[in-house]
Length: 308
Image 1 (tube, one colour):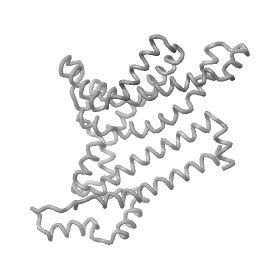
Image 2 (cartoon, helix red, strand yellow; image 1 turned 90 degrees about the vertical axis):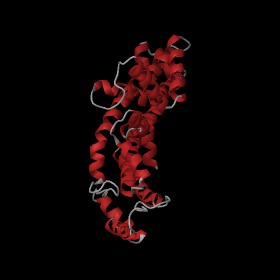
Image 3 (cartoon, helix red, strand yellow; image 1 turned 60 degrees about the vertical axis):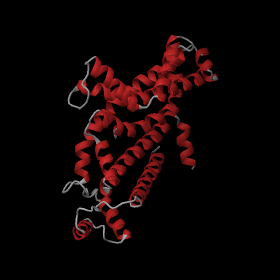
Image 4 (cartoon, rainbow, N blue to C red; image 1 turned 180 degrees about the vertical axis):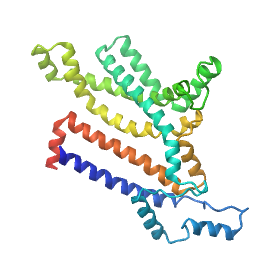
């Protein structure tokens, strides 16, 4: 197991380095100049480029960028004068992480639970309800869900605040809007996986051994059905923790999404690359967690890893 984990950690580190390299060069292919402004004299623009090191050869810029990255320094924002990207991320991440954790817990508990119930009650009311929720959650974009929630529950019924992120009441609507898509996906996937497992021979063998229906469901059906679901959960961790930019904008949440949008609009290279690396790191870490969970849930994967 230790070798299996070490292999995945090394692969994750290499992937992050490749991501950092790609984002450095790709954002510099974007058309435009972060300091190009007809109202600002050319001399001042050149000084700004020199101050941030953008007048140096590209490979030299890359070397400085990677050296700083290994030291945990994401640089200074080109547009937010005097502010470090590390500080901006630290300031806004708490809001995105809080919203993401709430959405993750809600979507995982309700989604997996709904999928299990739907599979066990196949063809009945719960099953039909789960299918309807799954179709709605997948088909309707999150920004439409968020807007409708604001209109009905904030404007019309005045139950929850329209926007901002200041109290528990402020978190309800954005949490539901952000989690509905993941919830629907998990419910549908868990239902399908459970139905596949239920028909397996080892389930019949477990019943023949005299195990109760509850033991069969928990120890054999749910555990084996969770394997394909773990992948979706792992990816969702990174996505939800880093926040969804559209939802944060709709509900005026001061999270990472605000800076990402502004960074792209202003060609703020350090801010774009810093946020992308942070998001990528979470996604890679989530995938690493998925690989480890795979090894725990299904020992055959560990064996295959050792042979590889």
